[in-house]
Length: 135
Image (cartoon, rainbow, N blue to C red; front, side, top):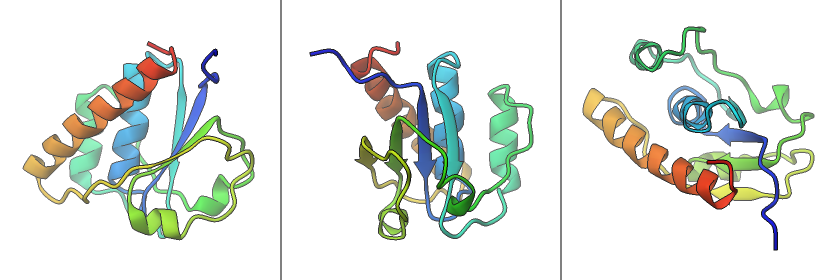
């Protein structure tokens, strides 16, 4: 049985300020831009400076902005990944949500927590992309 193609992923976390931002950037980096990654949240808040700095260190030059789920609910994604239980509970119906993964990661407030989150997310994303034949 052939794997379902994976060209786009929507990552969702409650505030769309840390976890989903990291996941989207890591997905595009690990997939060498073969997978388009977007992110949003049910209660968006500003992206902290330490996340902007982290993104710049990875070569992501565009400023990161937090988006509400409503801005992406009419778009089509090959997969939706919720990154915390609160975002999963607040999830509205998303068009073509046929592949949904539910992960639960803690919010990162410090540089050490951010590094740990980056490692965990990168490993899960790498495994996901491997199983989908992207990398």
